[in-house]
Amino acid sequence: MRLLEEAVDYLPAAEATAAVTAILRQVRSLILIAPLTKTILGFLRRTAAMPGLREQCIETIVATLHYEGKELPETVTSELRGIRAELIESSFSKKLRRHAGMKLIEDNFDVEGQYSDAAGPALIELAADVLADPPLLAPELAWLVTDEAKNGFQFGQFLGQADDLKLWLPIVSAWIKAGDKRSDYFIGGYLSAWHVKKVDVWEQLVESVFANAKIRSSALGLVWRSGMSDRIARSLLTMVRQGDIDPKAFQLFIYGGVINQLPLDVLESIVDLLLEGGDPIAPDAAMDILDSRLRGHADELSVLSARLERVLNSALFIEGSPSKHPNTMLLFRWNELANRLLDFNPDAEAKLAVRCIANFANVNSITAGFHPDPWKFLSKAAQARPAVVWPAIALRLEMHRKEVETLHLLNWLRGSGSIGEADEAGIDAIPTSLVFEWVDVDAGDRAWILAKHLPTDHREAGRPCHLCATNP
Image 1 (cartoon, helix red, strand yellow):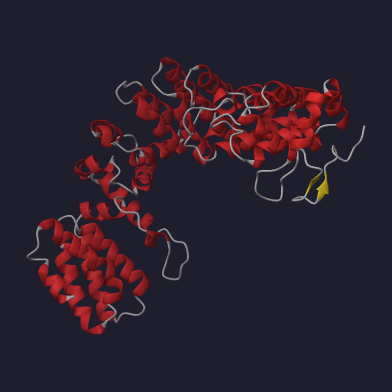
Image 2 (cartoon, rainbow, N blue to C red):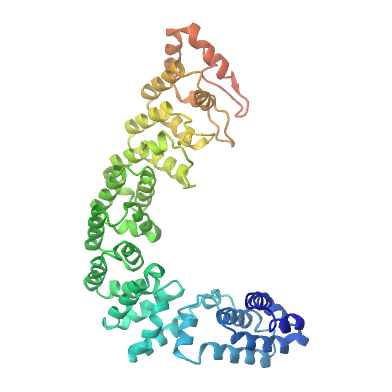
C-alpha cells in the first residue's frame, strides 16, 4: 500500500491517476485496518488536491462514512468529515458541484437504509443563494447546462420555483451556446417548475425555444422533461410536418407516460406521418406509440383500430426485411397488439392472418423462425374466421408446397418446432369439414400432404389430432 502510494509521485500522469483510482476503490476496506488508517487519511488529503480526482475522492469519502461510519472511531469519522467539508463546503462553486453535479446513491438513503433526499435541502439552500446573489450562477452555467450536472434537474426545479424569470435568459443563452454538449437536465428542471406554476408562461418559454431554428430539434427533450399541453403538442406536430423534427422522435414521449397526455388528434397525425413517410423502420415507432397509448387509454381502441390495423400490416412485420431489426421487443409488441385487435375486430385480423400466411417465414418477418406467439395468433384467427384463413393456407399448400417457408407453415399446422408447453397444432383451429372439402377436390395430390405432415397424434401434447382422428 505504502509503496503504491509513494510511487504515485513518480509515475506519469495517466499511470498516477490509474494508481490513485485503484487505491480509492479499496479505501472502504483499507481504512478499517488500524495500522493503515492514518496512511489512508493522508492519502485522501493528497488525492483531494489532485486535478481530476476531486469527485472520485468525494464519492469515496461519502460512501465510507455512509457504510463504514458506525465501525470507525469518532476521530477517524471526524477527520473524514473535515476532508469532505474542505472538498465541498469551502465555496459556493464547490458545494454546487457536489450537489448539482453529482448524484450519489448514498444521497437517497440514510444509514438505516430508509429513503431520504439528502441533496434536496442543500440544493434549496444553493437556489436561495443564487436568488439572493444572481451573479453567483453566471460562472457555473457553462457546465450546468451539460451532462456534467447529473443532478441538474432537481436544482433547476428549485430555481424555477422561486425565480420570476430573471434567470431564464442567462440559462437559455448558456444552453444554446453549449452546442452538442447541451443537456436538458438543468433547463428542463427549470421549465418543469414553470409548467407547475403557470402553464401559459411555460408555453411562452418553450415556444421561444421553438422559434430558434438552430436548436429546434433539441426542443423535444425539453418538453418531455418539463411537461405537456395541447398547445405545445400541436406546435410539435407543426414542426414534424415542416421537417424540423423526425416523427420517430415522438417515441421519447412513451417514457414517463407523456404519450398519454397528447391530444388524440395529434397522436393520430403522428402515426399517419410515420406510416406515410416512406421510412422502412417507422412502422416500429408507430407500433410502440400505439401500444403505449392503448395501455393508458384502452377506451381509445375503437378510434385507433384502423391505424393499428395498418401498423400491424406493415411490410416491415409481414414481409420482413434484409436485416434483423434491433428492437428486441418488436415480436412481443406485435403479438400483444394483434391479439388485442383480434378480440375487437376478428374480420380485420383474419385478413392480417391471411397476409402472414402468404409471407410465412419470410426472412426477419414476424413469422420467421420458431416463435410460438405468432403461431398462437394465427390459430386464434383461424378459429375465429376459418372460412377466411383456411383458403389462404390451402393456396399456400397448393402453389408453394416445395418452398422451405411452406415447411415452416406445416410445422405450425402440426404443432411442432417450438419450445414450451403451449405448442398447439394450428390444424386444430380449422373445422374438419373445410379441410376434407379441400382434400376431396384432388385427393391424389393433396391427401399425401396431410398424411406426411400431420401425424396421427401429438405425442408432446399427449392428445389426438382431431383431424386425423376423423374419418369423413
